[in-house]
Amino acid sequence: MLQALSKARVLSEKLGDNNQQFIALCGEASYHMISGNLRAADELGHQCLELAQASGDANLLLEAHHRQWATKHFMGDYATAEAHIEFGITTYDPDKHKIVSMASCTTNALAPVVKVVLHPNARSVKTTRINDAISAVI
Image (tube, rainbow, N blue to C red; front, side):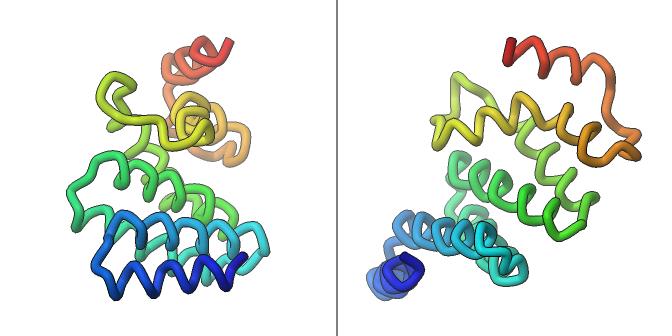
């Protein structure tokens, strides 16, 4: 699987197809994160974020931030993970943005709760946002 994703990334780079390159990079980053190779996942995720920023595509940008919050959390970099979560929460508009995956909308709905449960020292979470997130999934 990783070999196919890597070949797809190289080919899309040669062809100048940024959307396909983004998809391949995200796939590679996911593979590495699931495999526990967090440094590689972080580097590939950073490349996803740079590509999304350069493209100006809001959907890709949201997906790139979504990709990075999980990696940063598992790396123990809670402050950076929180910044990526906050970007998703403040930016996501269901009327404007396409749902790239169910995980993306789940993240946006549950991120305030996740911050409290997984990082209890996060003081920036407001009770109203937690209540809103819980209401969104009930």
